[in-house]
Length: 180
Length: 278
Image 1 (cartoon, rainbow over the protein chains, first blue to last red):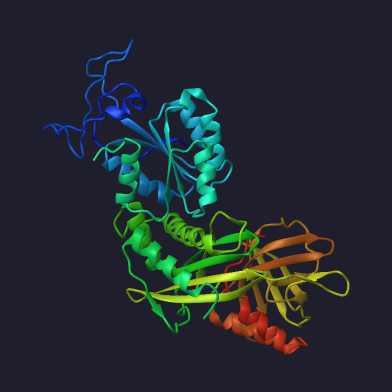
Image 2 (image 1 turned 180 degrees about the vertical axis):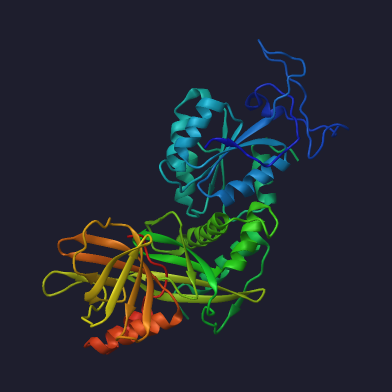
């Protein structure tokens, strides 16, 4: 699938590759022409990059076989200013990364068909091109052993289902990706 | 108190309140699924040190509300598949959280979803150990924990889960829109039935079954799946019995033709839930 979420967000983020700049995210007041939950970043200079108004959204990849969960997470992220792309399992997520990457954030379900979340995290972390992408495991698996395994494989954070909007925002804040 | 009763109550309430903003009130006694009521049931399986399943069943109208909330759309918008996805995910979250109190190691399956009309779907080889009913704004939510039976080898090393009986009833099996078989049973159980061989039927095909008791007697109607299609016969596994009366007629038919009535009653009491995929 690798589809951009249909949940619209007019939030525009001006930045270089956001994974390199996430620790410098600075929300600024919404401008008159920016609708919705707009936050902007200070434009960052990068070698070989344009420093003018080349505006790039912070990009999130939501990987879950459940459409309902993709919808819930996608909505929260979109309303927070992320550009959201969806994948239904790990294999599809890897295709997205190859064809539409890089992404700043991946929200990854644990239990999926074809390629599960653990396998996906391991594959992502084996590729240096995606090393800076933050990964949040989204799981119903509540054992600490499972969580430890995900973190050891390279996940940066985890969130357990069911979660609230506030919990998700708190996790993003921990990663320096809070937009709200 | 039933096994993990309090844990199931707590987890189910938390899931519904957190995800849907809906409160569930425990019902001490619960009504049966109403006649003609369309329900959606989701289940996840546990395998490992503890083998079983958690099933969650609710009316379609409530599934629609859940889907509307989860997909962020109005009540009129959710498609059938979205309602199924919503119920499957609710079952997944409930089972996933419950897994932490089950013996380890234990794996959780992907959720599966079935629809039923005024019926309780079945899971073969599972025994109902805990059933909790909730009221959600006047609608019934059923959560069941089922445990896999210990299979016992019979005298001919044949694994039998349910009592099989021979019964003189007329049978009609429809696959797609085509009647593929009319005839008589080889044997019948709560789990399904075996008929004489029929050519050209694919294993896994969904089918509708009608068993007619006597020349103009009542009928047992079931939706099922072809699980065997060889020279040894056509095996059909029942996935749901259509109508409450079908369940009663099937019970009476097997009791009447069986020898161990107590065991048969036990099978019917304990095997309500969701059927696993064949």
